[in-house]
Image 1: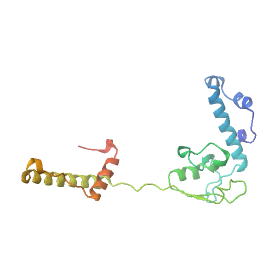
Image 2 (image 1 turned 30 degrees about the vertical axis):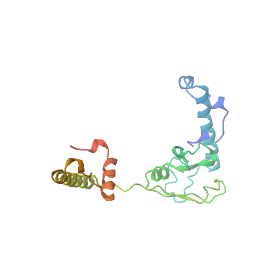
Image 3 (image 1 turned 60 degrees about the vertical axis):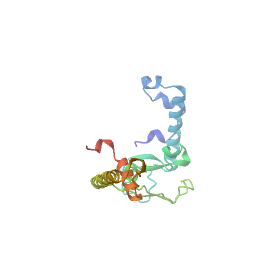
Length: 185
């Protein structure tokens, strides 16, 4: 079985004895402790979840297994047994690409806050950049026309700035979301 290393929690010394000495020698004591703690969490979670994907809707149980953080690390989730669960690679990748819903098993081995819950990521609506550019072009032309007209009619000290509608502000903000590589002159 590919998960033999996780069937038994080894001591820190035993765990690092399996490493290549060149890779091990360059690690600080703090980094060694962090790596070992992640190994212990992974062992504990694999054993708790019986080396099985915890998604009730799993259609690929033979896929390789991965450690999933219920609360993402980037959102303050910890590398802890309480925050981690085992998913197969297909379920895990499908979830992170917002193509798959995870329905956790209602099993006693899972932490109570995970047991029987459902998780789904939502992708942002795709942006039609051609339409945003066309809208921006129209706004620029409209502003230029109104400014040209106001310059002709109003003396310098009495000129008023052009006021944008909320819809125009929304289009401007959508335009600013566009990656600079996609701008064309």
